[in-house]
Amino acid sequence: MRASVVSTGEELVRGRTVDTNAAFLAAQAEGGGFQVRRIVVLGDEPRPLHDELLRCSSDSDLILLSGGLGPTADDRTRWAVAEAAGLQLEEDADTRAFLAARLASFGRDLDETQLTQAQFPAGSVILPNPRGTARGFACRVGPAWLVAMPGVPDEMRGMFSESVLPFLQQTLMPGRCVRVETLHLFPIAEPVADERIRDMSAADRNPLLGITTNDGVITLSVSARADDPQTAEALLTRDVDTLRERFGETVFGSGSDTLASALARVLAEHGVTIGIAESVTGGLVGHMLVSVPGISRFFLEDVVAYSNESKIRRLGVEAALIEDKGAVSPQVAEAMARGICAATGCDLGVSTTGIAGPDGGSETKPVGLAYVGVALRNGATSVKLALRGDRRRIKDRAAKHALNCARLALLHGVESLGDGRG
Image 1 (cartoon, rainbow, N blue to C red):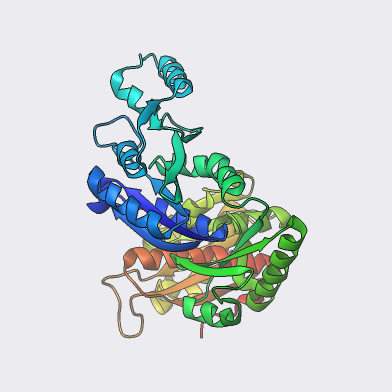
Image 2: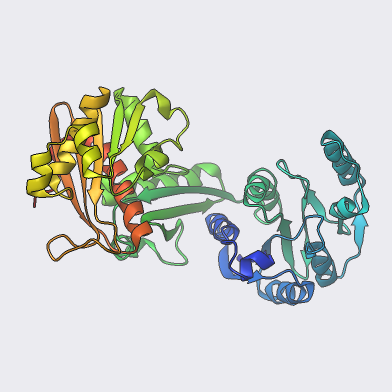
């Protein structure tokens, strides 16, 4: 089956907002066994949307549409859909009552502007919005099913998981069982990962295997389809096991895992506390780590020792070491990691130092050179990184390497990381 993804909003076409909805919906459609034919981004004008919906309905079984369902003057999606479907807009009494109650809880009355959100193409399946007032809906546009959802990412994702997915499974995939799992890899280049799965990537293969990259993290999506759940699960497990074997420790997690949550899980399993000493990443490692709920049980402190004076005073790095080796060196990275352990009493110390650019590099220490230091159980080592890109990218990659090095050190010891002096 084929799917099209359409996003609407002037803020998207004018570059004021990044369209994350399309990527999410395309991944969900692919995971559900659909072949995504196109992703389209349009402004708020209803005529171009009307024309695009007719085009999509001519070659797609499913149209996933986000945006334009709110009460403001530029929210025109429902009118464009109704015209493309050849249907009249009708008021839904249950949605009207829902809107009235929701607004009353805010001390507001239901007015004509808000009431537009109770209008749907006749005969639509109305989809609840657990996080907002704009309900979604599903209706036929020609031979295709169209599902319209709000453009606010949090609202759209909640609606998709709780309402849209069950609707699709009942309507477009009756009797079919789909099992999906995603594996996340770091660090590995996409061409390298793609080469390792070349024999598993045929478009007509079951399970279907997809590969995407986002800020250095590779995600492999495995979607198995069968007539019964046991067969689908067996197909999925076979491929997931194969991928884990091929990629080894490069696989840091699955599903909603991040490098930070993967590290947090290992910290909990080992009962280890951690302290961070950051220079080049400027607090980014700690920022990633505190995004994990419950991390306060293990994360003691994050010191941003950006200046040499701070490295000396706060972390106890010897001034002579910085003078001799330079602040960007494996020796200083290791001293910083040991220093945060001494300063906080943590079991695991992780540090970053490097040159994020665009200035400050030299022939021997170019922009992108960075070191991650790790200290654990009286042992310490460092990992040398040669990073590319702008300042944001270099900081991001260095922070992710720091989290991953900490994870691997806990799993296999600091000696498994090698020696950054090379």
